Amino acid sequence: MITGVLNWRAGDRLTLTACAGVVAARRDLAGMVTVPARCCVAIPAALLLLDRMGLSPADLMATARARRPVPTFAEYVPGNTRGRGLARGNVR
Image 1 (cartoon, helix red, strand yellow):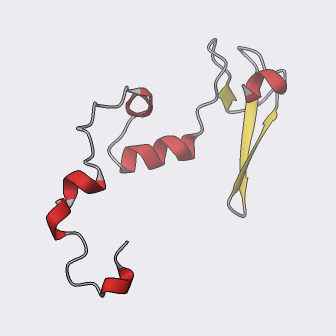
Image 2: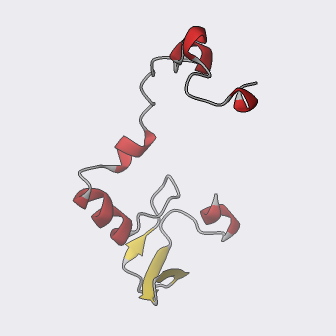
């Protein structure tokens, strides 16, 4: 994880600065964000965006629901109708 590469540890304080569409995080004794024991950083702007979308961080981690199988082309377009409406030279 990025926090490990940056050598941030649980309890470290960080300052987040936003400028020109970029958020910079740096270690700062007077920082407004504390790195939790799980060593992740919750960025307030990302949490705000998720909230506006009606989602939570847990929603992003949830297991995807099983989807029904997608039909193949042969199943979707019956064989006897393939090529209808096309010139003979375009049908393969």
